Amino acid sequence: MMVHVDNLTKRFRGTLAVDRLTMQIPTGEIYGFVGANGAGKTTTMRIIAGLLKPTSGKVYVNGVDVSKEPLEVKRNIGYMPDFFGVYDDLKVSEYMNFYAGLQGISKSKTAELADSLLQLVRLTEKREAYVDSLSRGMKQRLCLARSLIHDPKFLILDEPASGLDPRARVEMKEILKELRSMGKTVLISSHILPELSELCTAIGIIDSGRLVASGSVSEVVEKMSQSGRVKIKVADREEEAVKVMMEMPGIGSISSVAGVIEVNVSGGNEEYVRILRTLVEKDIPVISFQPIEGSLESVFMHLTERGNGNEN
Amino acid sequence: MRINPILEKDLKTKLRGWRSTILICCYVILLIGILFLYFASNNIFNPYNTHNFNPRMAMDAYNLIITFQFALLFLAVPAITATSVSSERERQTLDLMLVTKTPVRKIIVGKIMVSLAHTMLLLIASMPVIGVVFFFGGIGFLDIIKLLLFYVLTSFFVASCGVFFSTVFKRNIVAIITTYIFLGLITFGPFILFLVLGLVRERYSYTGFSPVYRDFVSALFPSSVFGFTSFYISGSSYSMYYGYYSPGIFSEVAQEIEQQRMASTGLWKLLHPWLANGLFNVVASISLIFLSARILNPIHRKK
Image (cartoon, rainbow over all chains, first blue to last red; front, top):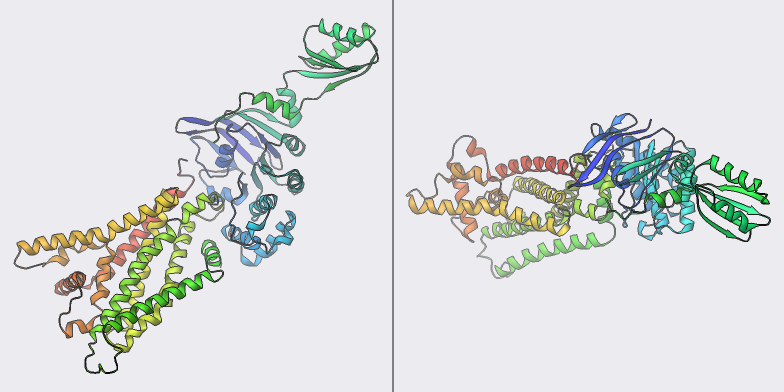
């Protein structure tokens, strides 16, 4: 287990930012951390990175207690916050050299390491450029390279794609895929939910400082979806099909356009079977019957309906 | 082994380009200008003035230059260090440093070393100017070495104060102002107290200041002005020989302190003001480094 968070609580002058949060991230996992602004994502990530003292609870990274052996933990952690944190008056190579020094990497190894990381983040040609001349996306990638300079086993990426244009997002996504193939364990928070669901092997949904769901994307979506949705295509008798379904229990809203009917259904597969059987029994000419899978986005929107909490 | 990465980075960025070179040149030219004006005002460049040279004049020129440097040290070092941590915080780079495996203490020391390096650079650049007084005699090489050591120890303390307040306060401006106020109090506070107590004693005692040194010296330890008195007079071997010459109250007090020290016995006699203040500076600086590291350490921070 790379990360084990046990009953973590953090209070800021009476405000509860993280509330008895318990989560585990197995080694090699890309764990997406989903939650509205102020849900407690950044606070949790900062505590895991050893940048904040928890009010109570324990955090272990690679089996090491963060509050007892912070330096040992820092050897294994690469942290990329949701801001750039760059020195504009340094060149890209000097920036990498500076953080290599802070990570205790010898000068002889630094140049080679920096080159390979700049290659990974596609900034090789900017090696001698000043940091302030880089675009937003480039700065973000440079920060990612910086967080990898000491070859950490575990990466914490707080909103790595925020503020980036679509192209820069795609580039960031490609880099994260490479990190996944390198076997890194990654904890990533993002508002770009479709990207998260594609990238992550597991996700956790945090709301008001509490982890409300955790598991693989499909598991969480299934667990959190309150109702299913099914798309039915009929060859004829569309109005009759709608009328039949409206009389059935457990049916929510129905919409129909040009022979395609979309129905909200409370319940799972059994309910779908019952609808299809009824339509066939009523001799409705059904061409196709397709349950629509729930998305991470819809789950997130549902969970964060209240969601304009305070930033923490 | 690598040098402290913070020192390396700051020196690289601050010394890059012509700005710092121009600043150092301006500083040296300013020192030369002060010296030139002083000698010119004392008619030393007059070719007909061959019979009226007072070697004390060189001493006073020396005093003038080192006082200027001393004051500059108190003005410049806090400006560099009192923003050292708060500016990292404002730039949002502090967390990135704290998340590395460099211990917080080493980050603090790196910040202090940056200002010490700048101070050393300015002091070394000014050496040829101070060296002019060697032509006139009266100042020994050892006096200069002691003065340099005193400046370094004082810079160490001033820088530690700056970094400490920079860790305490989040905003640059608050950190700078607090540092200046604190340094003003600790530098001049004990000295003013000493003067007041000394004058009170003098008024009500037939023995003048005595035995001021033993009575009040420990209270004066924190004052760098007290330490500075060693150089204002102790380098002046001529001042005793040629008799009393007073450029002001500070010289009188410096002379009084020196006389009291000479009159003391045992360890007190060995404890020159610069040495006493230097020892205080070292102890206080180390304490401030530990305190700063504790405040900055995320594991101890509340927020």
